Length: 141
Image (cartoon, rainbow, N blue to C red):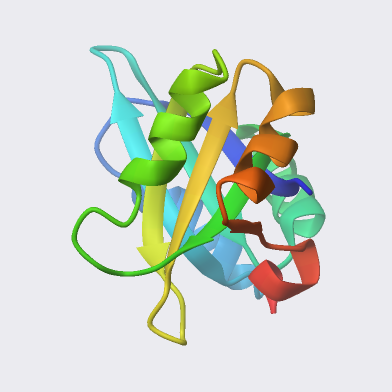
């Protein structure tokens, strides 16, 4: 089961991230997770939001380059090394993790977000390794 992540290409200029946050706030969009990867000229902002489609529309209306991307959000026990078995299962199945980030849920469990090169196969690997992908309504609520 996959969820929608908001992906935004952002100029690497002072104040642009603040403008993005303000635009989402004015649209009453709540961010659950945020990560920024940068280069000299631009950044790639990845956001898990409570209303991903509305967030994308709100940012596009403000002139941002935004898109929705399908990713896995996997519940992982929040203990040292808790993520290793899942990554090892991906490796054994020949699945590459293109990027990942994590955050803590309200229940104190870790949620790890992944984009893989073989999404069709990843779900069965996640399950077989004893992990659970979160449904959109679990993640956005």
